[in-house]
Figure 1 (cartoon, rainbow, N blue to C red):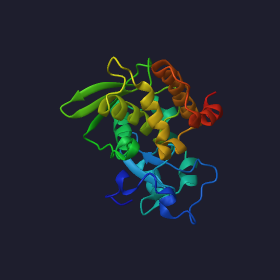
Figure 2: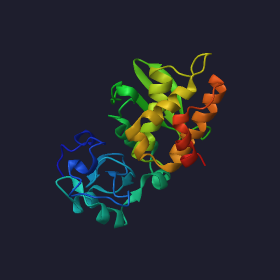
Figure 3: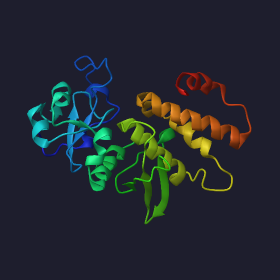
Figure 4: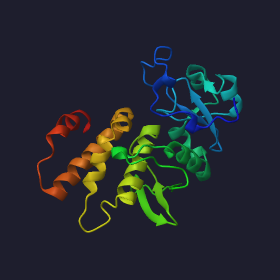
Amino acid sequence: MQDTLNAQNFNRYSYCLNNPLKFVDPSGWLISPYFDIKGNFLGVDENGFFGQIFITSKETFNTFSKDGIGDSKMLQKSGDTKEFYSYRSKLTDNAINSILTKIIDGTELPYGEGKLKEGEFNVKFTNDYSSNGEYKGLQNSVHHFDFSVTNYEWTVENISGTAIHEIWGHGIKGYANRVEDKHHLIYGAQIDDSQNWKQSTNEYKGFVLRHYEKYYKEETGLQFPNKYLNIIKKYKH
């Protein structure tokens, strides 16, 4: 593995490393970044920085990789490789925070408003399961939020979507932080964030849609927008 490899060498939306003819993924599962138990980024498999996140050893990743690109089938067959969400209780909070930070770094903000960059935000894993995430405010130009997602899988896109919600929605835009609540605008932006939304899991989509419909009706008193009705029917339940 090349020492210079890091997550930003891969655009998470450059599917199959810009070579879809060579690398295909009909199952949708062979798309993963890999970290060690301390939260250090090891690399990605042949499809890039998408989907499921895995924990493995540096030795295992190096054994089943070439030029920093892992062989997904071999890595995920290895007994050393664990899925991040199911293995999270075995990791320290610092390791989880490091992984979350790397996943969020580079996330595209809705409506072409830029990207989230490491150093502009601080994510802290918490065992407070009262919510999926909570914005903790802006301190010294750094957006702080707690991450405690339990309602859906911890994939690259689901984590990035939560960061968009907390940092962009509650932090940068200030929605739902004032008397005139605009919480529905955050959920709407998550859906309009087409690439992240497209790759998110169905459970995550259902969670976002249920809350979007709820807050839209409560905060506007209007009929739910027609353009979202078909999406609601598909993923809401």
